[in-house]
Length: 229
Image (cartoon, rainbow, N blue to C red):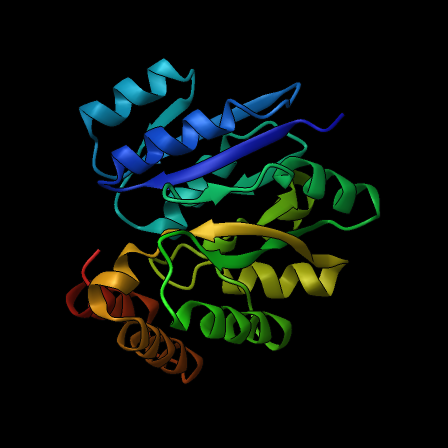
């Protein structure tokens, strides 16, 4: 039986964190370590972590560094990185366990928008699946990886945005890093608020600028100013 360490970066998303930890405790995992890296130093987050026996680390609002800090203290065989607003399928743990048993060092879940959905959701999900096939899945897809492989690669980049890109690229070079058929449900509240096409277009522009060599730190500042969380 694999031991899982679940690392969750959190920044002013305590209610979503409460829902996620409630869900995680419903899974039948013999050994499950939960590490929350709280970049807001929130008292409510501390209370939630105490309630669910999760380890809490206080950090700064830089998601890549938060993930590195959490992973540095993780003891599980498999590291599972989740955003605080992730919604999980019933067979999530079973799917990861089967992937590792088949020889993969890690992988990621299929992107799906959580309810309530709108008409563009299906089309955007297909576009994201295509991007993952030829490019890189992002952190909202529940990336998981064997702890030994993560440390061999060097972990996430210490960036506030696109921090998973070097990790995924190196994982694919190292060994099997697989897509799962099991979905992870991504909170669609920002798409509803900003507009489905507008939000997706802004995301693609950020990715294009990153591919052209723009600093992740400058892009993160643009992300915060253009697309409010």
